[in-house]
Length: 423
View 1 (cartoon, rainbow, N blue to C red):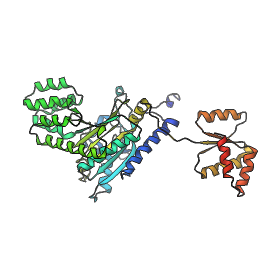
View 2 (view 1 turned 90 degrees about the vertical axis):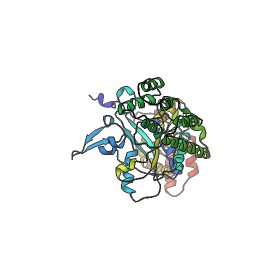
View 3 (view 1 turned 45 degrees about the vertical axis):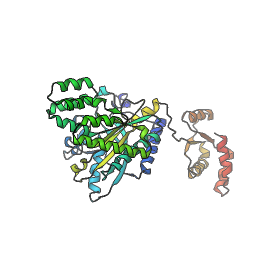
View 4 (view 1 turned 60 degrees about the vertical axis):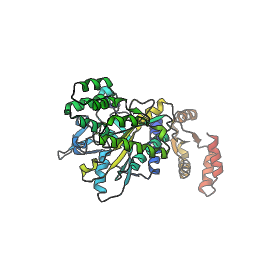
């Protein structure tokens, strides 16, 4: 039983030492990008009432939620997605706000995936939400900021696929087919199953031009030129044509940001979250089997919480990004410059004073009492294994130096020279 307690449940894992430091460094680097764009931090609870993520919200299916009860019998869930939480908090604390608000966050999300999917059930997301701005400029800012965060992570090769949630929906509504048939067609197109979509449509009463448009959706991805093909297939469907016009304008503004090389278009893109209403996007790179960034426009989500406000946002899936960086052999420079001061019981007072002095200079210091029977060489090997850059031994020379330091004779140069000798 004790041995079993050493293991984590399926779908979660531990991170420690260098790996954990790299993750925190990556998050800090990406967070700086969001702050440079004027985004301010928000923190929402790890668990919320079930209705915040209910079916009418359009987020994660109920079967994939971690659910439990409070003492009053209310159903609570671990958040599967942070965006609805931010929407709820915004509706409460910014109810009177009529100008755009920029919010960013880092937090863990929890989805009870099936074990055969091989995905983590607890993942860290870093995200940003631009609330209260319906303009194409807001769309462009979020996409541009997304490309900058991936560049800040150290990626050289990545692609942002951009689509529009209403393009496919408008064509689907035009067919007039049954709901069950719509769901099946959605699944086929989301999986880019060209032949399956063609076979299904051949059994349905849909006019030829619309049928051709739907069958072509899995192939409508590529450079900006794909928008010309999409426009021709849209026919007289004004909603679909409006989507194309917005994507064209978005690309023009992204060219002003200078990030057009990372942009592609995918008119067959689907999203598992039904609350998206406009531009949607996903980012991909080598070494990751899933999107490392994802998001889109959700102009109706806040209405569920009593506040009407057009919004757009994105999240970076930190765990997916870390995996991609590792497989691409892109190093994350995590700062680790600890100093170990090794002392005996009689040197304790001087060692503590020396440690306090170094810490006052902003240095990281470990105080280590040397155990009987342990040699200095053993501590050197331990320091090297733990990537401790300096080992300071409390000799009589350091003891005398500390006495001088305490009495006011601050021999900073001498102390620093000693530390350099120990590197």
